Length: 205
Image 1 (cartoon, rainbow, N blue to C red):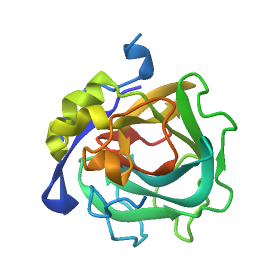
Image 2 (cartoon, one colour):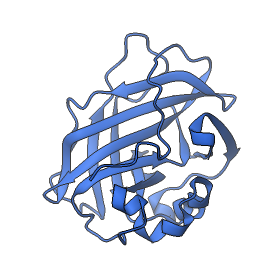
Image 3 (cartoon, rainbow, N blue to C red):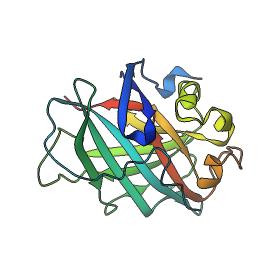
């Protein structure tokens, strides 16, 4: 699985993209600040030459397990020329489910159905399996691009299941984590976690 590194600029007004190798887990043996790599635009529309998508999510760990409470997930579509499009797909929290254990293979996982929008703007996957796990070295190396290199020890990595394996696509943390107030510990404590992207994910064939 190959990702593209996503470099954020000026409050995510535009993407400045550069190629980079993907970051799979196999490569290595209570509110959240809404301005943190967030996109407020939720318009949907046709995308020309869609090729990639970006995952953004706010997900809750409650009583030690993944919870559907307060779940907010959206997918931004990026075209084949690595240009951002106006296609943003907000996903309903209805149907979001969490794994019963907070430490399944060292991850916390949520399963999120991708309900088709009125005007399909990209060949999106039917479901997403999104998770939080230990910091991944490729993610740590890229945290400076979003100004978080100094709080890397407070953050987790955000993962997707791609090709039946965990793949790191970004970073995750609570408001306290993102302020650098708490050291990352496992299992991850209760709280609302922002999962923010550092990598583009290829759309399904």
